[in-house]
Image (cartoon, rainbow, N blue to C red; front, top):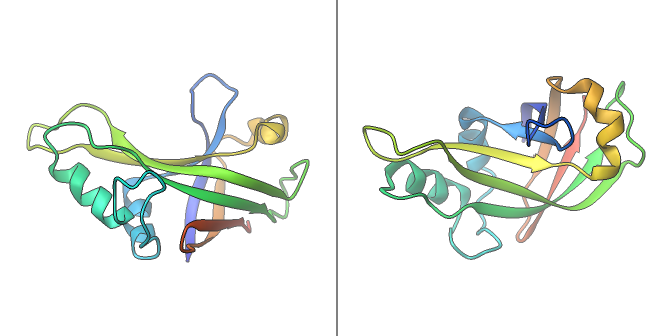
Length: 142
């Protein structure tokens, strides 16, 4: 599944580079990511999104293990493969007036890649996402 995502500073402190997933991308990814999270709290990403949308208290975060293969044509990283990264989908902000919580997703990239990627924060990325049974693969292609 091809997704259009972007590089972000997860901690807003200029030193934790991540790939951000907004709500529309999470909904799209939920059709592919049908397996349970590694914590056992959620049966699938779609189930987490539904729970968050209707929850009266903050839902548990949905986590998946992901390997990242960096094949971007113009942004180089020190290595092409970042193994055992963690994708997280979590609630974002306070309980909404209508009930439920907004959601966000992110995947923190390897710390060794930070110096190479920090100048590119906000850059749009094309990503191919392949969901496995217990472990996923994200290929950054452009």
